Length: 225
Image (cartoon, rainbow, N blue to C red; front, side):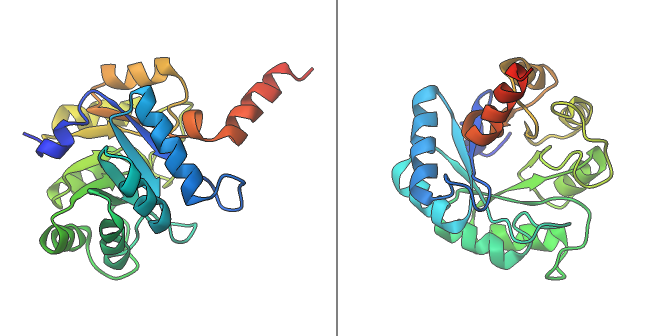
């Protein structure tokens, strides 16, 4: 059985409230307002990046929060070290998302060591962002509380699919006893539904809800002649 906190996410939509660097919306207050709007729309959880955003959202949004800290641009950059993870939890995230691949971590700790220390020192849950089925299985064995397909198509192990990587999602949902959360390139309600059909415990949507620059570009390209 999943942890009771994860149980509140089952069958629901988690909205990822993140803005890219140097964007007009890159501000904790803006991301918090988007999170509040997501609550009104029926979200069951929020995923947020950066300590200031996490802290602000924690203070004003009652839903469970999956927090992460992106540091760097290549290889392991999603909450890449134990130091980053502890800071994310201290900022208010009940679940900390970390790079859950089999790649070497910059602080020299193994994935299992990192997860164990997060559990022991904070009691927070760990979501392992993985890039393949093999990553997901290894993350479960390392002690992750849930896994997400976040990095599928971005580590070189899997092709970047047009839409979510349903193949990896199906495999992990069929073999793992912990929740498997669909994340990555879920751009339409139909794709979100397909993730549930493939076995997703919950679905994360970010860009299609919270990134107006990309959404505007989709429409601009569709009307350009």
